[in-house]
Image 1: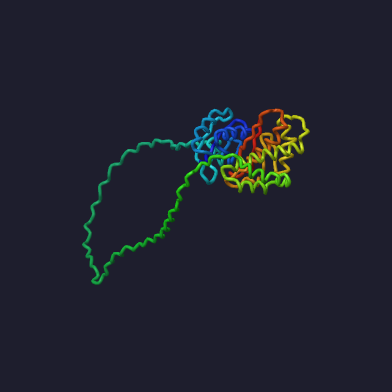
Image 2: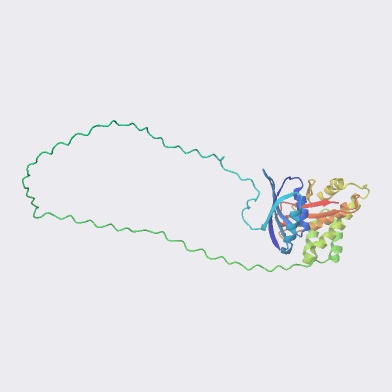
Length: 326
């Protein structure tokens, strides 16, 4: 698995995360973090996605064909401060000012000087010879000795010892787990207890995650979610007439799921906050997808209901987001 940082520029903001999230999920990646920033150039979107390295070219091809993306860049994700967006408008701490024109030096006007006739040189006066002067040096005159140059001592600060080279552990080889079908025996054992404890179902679900094999964890969560959602619909909403998808989400999906976990419907998807099933490195969103399939499938008039995970808090997102469409 690799983590990639996707920076994209779009003209509009509404529903952008859902539209691009569908492309990311269809390409075999999951969204771990996301950020949208309004800029004079448009909407700057930054996504951190995780998936198999062999799918990177498919992701690039899908983003190139996306009608809402003007341009994008993909690079390996590196921990640290956020990297500046490639399409961000340039900003200045102060408004740039044009340079002042160079002042040319002023030249003083030249005043012509009237010509003066040169005077004839006067003859030099005759000088009398000077009497000889005897110079007598004192017998004990001290000779001035040249002062020696002072000694310069340069004090150099000691250089700090070089930091030890950090030991880099070799990367662990990635082993792709082959998905298995749901563990029906474990589901049959826990399902009666979940129905009896409803809506306090998370202790049973956490026990299921620990009990089944890693390769069967997601399929088991999806299966028990479908059966739980179907049971809730038959118990509380079985007499309801067929509804449009948006109305079914508002009237059935949000109240039923809200009894289990904190949820908010924003029109572009269901935002699930503080999911106890989603821990670092392990997503439990398959249960919520199956729950909504079993709950909303009998309630809507459409025969096909598509639910997929856009992002999950297990990979650093603020909330788990599920996109629902027909």
